[in-house]
Image 1: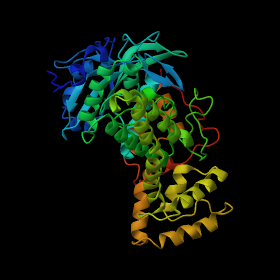
Image 2 (image 1 turned 45 degrees about the horizontal axis):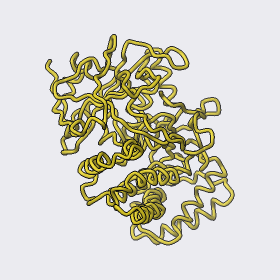
Image 3 (image 1 turned 90 degrees about the vertical axis):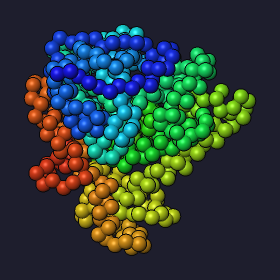
Image 4 (image 1 turned 135 degrees about the horizontal axis):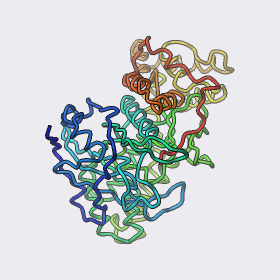
Length: 477
């Protein structure tokens, strides 16, 4: 079967300072674990072709199809606040871009495809566990309605990689609106390459924010997208875990699912990442970290905002200072429907925070508490202060223009019944490591409809027992 992918590679048409041309490195014995057939069709690709011998060879990096322009992107980044002037794709290779059925441009990237000029001391490969984690969590985020990169396929390589021990190797085929990051801009800014910054700015505006007229307009558009994204994360109890500038996608999509996690018991200071020793990227600090990242982005754009540095700094500062209001608005848009509210009133933020404070005091399960409100039960009925809060909540609901039925529907649509709980993800990975992919497949099925009541999957709503708790998650590199 001849493999046909209608590539149209705009990033590869940029100057070669933006990337290194690099073909994937072949693997010994590729075997398809899973193909996302619905996503393949949305991309305008033939699932049967992708599942063919030639298709699997492409997904593993053994075959570069006609029209592809494989490359590793260059970027820099602040990692936990420390600037690294050159990072780049050390184990990922962008095969090319396609226009999907809706006319949207999408990257197709192989993650774990071997060494690149940016690999430094790394082997450029990926272990099976992190590949499955990213597949599960990114597809769950998509089902939750949160902007994210997607997983098109996972392939076993037939080769082992060494991490803490010997692990089976795998390749993830990742799809994104683009893989351009704050760190991409930093790569050129630190080198003083203003012409390259201008080309990159024009590329991002054309690709993602055509409503933006210039660099300042781009900054404002990206600020709004980041505010919405982080608010949506917080609405489902998600903690990214590694919000470095090289993981801040300009498209406004969630990217890089390394030490991420969804909270079980709620506390605003929750941290899962094994490398986040100071709590820099704790749940409640994610908005602060997003605006910090945006300040680094704004700094890169200064030469393009205004030739007069003082004027450029003033305009960029004004834009950055708008983030607080942008985030507050996005946060309220996310959390109001979680307690049944459709219109805005003064005092809504205090009402929501009142519930969160009660939840934190009790260590209440984040997902189940909000879902219980949607289902008409009182999840914190034994908590001191809940009766008073519930009375204020009911009074507030009484001022909504619609009735209880619409309010309940709104809450059910905003509060998932199931999330990819850490202990479930780890259990699916553990089974796969011994050759049993059934739990992985079941988990993907359950998470595909997170807002639905499916009695046969009731146990997936259960929080972990003390012995099942996963308190740390790890970077997949």
